[in-house]
Amino acid sequence: MSDRSWFLAFDGQQHGPYPEAQLRQFIAEGRIAADTPVWTDGMADWQNAGDIPGLFARAAGPPGLPRSGGPPAATGGYAPIPWLLRWYTVWYVSQFELVERTA
Image (cartoon, rainbow, N blue to C red; front, side, top):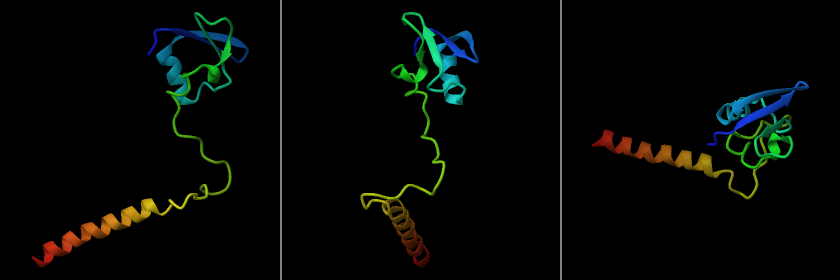
């Protein structure tokens, strides 16, 4: 992680400087969006935070939930694998329990 200090622009005002660790914490908390203007030493002008390579990539969590509808449709024929694997594992373990009880 870098030692850079970052400035932010929101609500019509400049804020900062913030250490990069704090900036990444703001991103993780959702307090800074991809369209928030940021600036650090060495940049010619303000840029949106989402346009800076790696800034959001390391702080990003899982994608947002869909706004409407149900879960995404399964494609490729691989949807049954997780539940099938779980079912097989439960069945397989139960076979050892049966062997233990009868022994």
